[in-house]
Image (cartoon, rainbow, N blue to C red; front, top):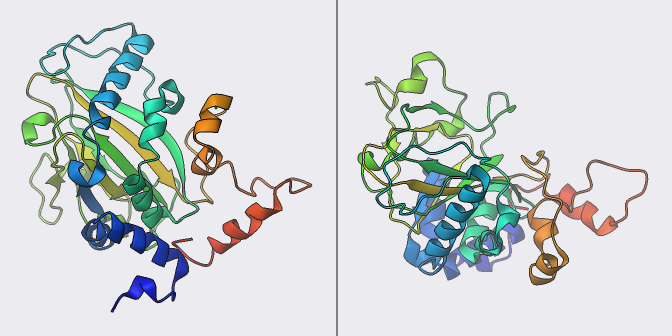
Length: 295
């Protein structure tokens, strides 16, 4: 039976038909059951995009920090402090990435068709980072019990290989998105033996998209080999959430090329409410998001 073709759940039907088109239905099943998935570079279609994202990130890092990394594959030094958020408008390749149709389908599956890109950050890691990031959840300000659906979603572009523990990968606890924040020794279950928490290492080649429910417990372990781990993190949120960063400098040229940027960045909302509603057509989609988790 072709359920998405029956029209019983129009919002979900659209998302599932898109997932079928891009052959990522199994990825959505993983997200629904475990809260986590990795989409392969082949399904993402990122063979050309990955090196351009990597090059742009290293260029922005150099501008922000004054430090040049000549060869990210062999670099063996420390990384300078830099502004990790606010990357979207630094290079058009970042805007190109958020228009990837597979990426958008997954973001909508987790946060609804009214979900928006709340912020974009970059993580760089060399083996001179001398600590393991404790297990934590990004559901800041959301008290337990957490809802069965995602309020946040983490969509991370892996721009270098995450193939072994030596690469310093992200560590996740599948299923943990259904509960609460880690407590006490639970936050170190990825570096110390624990009787009921069983973290896994994120595994995927460069060009993959790693996705998880923002409530999932995650952390990372130290990198122990030369080279720089490069990750572009995009956080999606539901329409009622406040954005992490506010992007205001969209150029007329960018808006002409990507006219849907106001929607993707959460501008087209009815809140905060004002005396007059300048765009009444935005009211119903926001209200509908309260009726259907996929709207």
